[in-house]
Length: 87
Image (tube, rainbow, N blue to C red; front, side, top):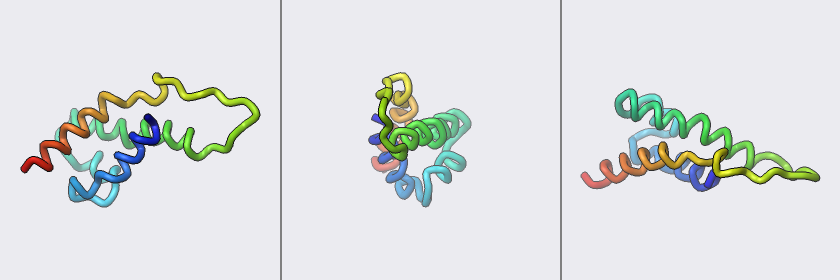
C-alpha cells in the first residue's frame, strides 16, 4: 500500500498542472483539501521512503496497516482527479 500510494503521488502532478506533488499540496484547493494532500506529501511519503529505501536487516518488522494506511487522504485525492478529468 505504501509503494502504491507513493507511485500515485509521484505520477499525478501533471493532472493538476504542476511539476511536483509538493506544488499540488501547497497550491491546490481550499484548506481542507490542502491538509489532506499535505498529509500524502509528508507522512505517506516518509513512511513509503522508510520501507522502500532502507536495506534489509537481520530482523525485520513488517509494516502494519496502521503505518501505511493513507486511504482517507488517497480517496480525497482520487476523487479530485476524477473531477478534474471529467471536465
